[in-house]
Structure formats: structure tokens, C-alpha cells
Image 1 (cartoon, rainbow, N blue to C red):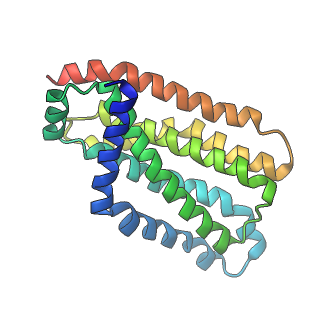
Image 2: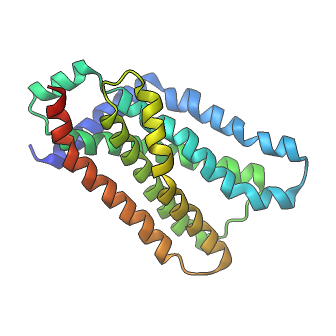
Image 3: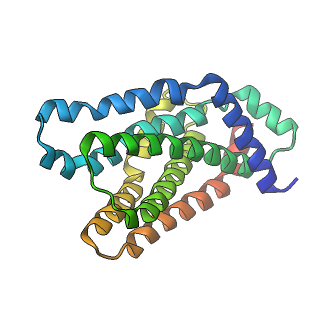
Length: 224
């Protein structure tokens, strides 16, 4: 079985498990939408201010809650599941790619819901010609966050303070992703070019994938 077929199977299993548990939809999404209400209540009916800060608030919450979604997918990789994958002859690189794919799919859904809530609550102006570039930025950001969180989960696997360490790894390294996504939207709003920021997002995604695939095997060997 090829690496991509193995990766798709890992992603499918992860999404089936998430569909049964439903933590992303039932817990994280409602809390993220509730967090959007904090600023409107704090500032009052200041529509001009809300329109100005809508997208920055969206990306901030996207990082904070998106990181939890992606890290949770990595945390589901128990020792028993690793042993089962090893007995099945699963390539560690395929496991990394599959886990990143499943986390990215969940993040896309989460960010889409969060974006709709942001547009409704903050009256953020989004024109028709911004839809496609915004969707591309959202997907690239989601995959980058998923790959980064999966990589952080692999590096910190087996450590007692795994959750805290993984978050400390993800937070600073997500800056290129946040910058690329946020500036893509800001550039569209200003009417300037978005190519440079889109390439930053794409380059970050590719770099994280290459690093994750390269270290998956050595990290797996270090645990045995």
C-alpha cells in the first residue's frame, strides 16, 4: 500500500473516531463562538470598532482553539494504537500525513463556522471577490496549523508534560501562518497584492510537511 493510501486510511479512522466522540462540534466550537461575544459586550454597540477588529479576533481565536483541536487529534495516538499500526506495517510518515490531514479537515470546518459567526457578530465586510482568496487562506492556514500541531505532538510524545510542551512549540512557530493568513485578508481589503502572503502560507505548509515526514521514522525508532 502506498504512503498516500496509508495516510488516507489513517485520516479516515481519525475522522470516524472524532465523529463518534464529537468533541470538536459539541465542545470546542460552542466555546469559540461564545468567546466571540466577549468583545462586543465589552465595547458596547460600537460598530465601527467591531468591523475593524473582526478579522484579527477571528485569527486569534482560530489559533487558540484550532491548536486545541489539532493537538487533541495528536493526543489520540495512544501506545496501543501505535503498536497496532506498527504490526500492520504502517509507515510512520504516512501516520504523520494522515493525522495532519484529519486535523486539517476538522480545522477547516471549525474555521468556517467561526468565520460565519464573526461576519454575523462583527459585521465584517467581505465582498464577493474576496471569497475565493479567503477560502484558500483559510485552508492553507488550517493545514499548516494541523501539520505543526501534529509535529509538536510527535516530538513531545511520551513526556509527562506533553500537552504544555506541545502548546509551547506550536504557539511561536505558528506566527508565519497567522501572519500569512491575516495579511492575505488585510491585503484584499486594501486592494493590494496577496501573492507574497499566500506564498508564505504555502511555503510554511510545505516546510512543515517535509520536516514531519523526515522525522517521523527516527522519532518512531527512538520510542522502541
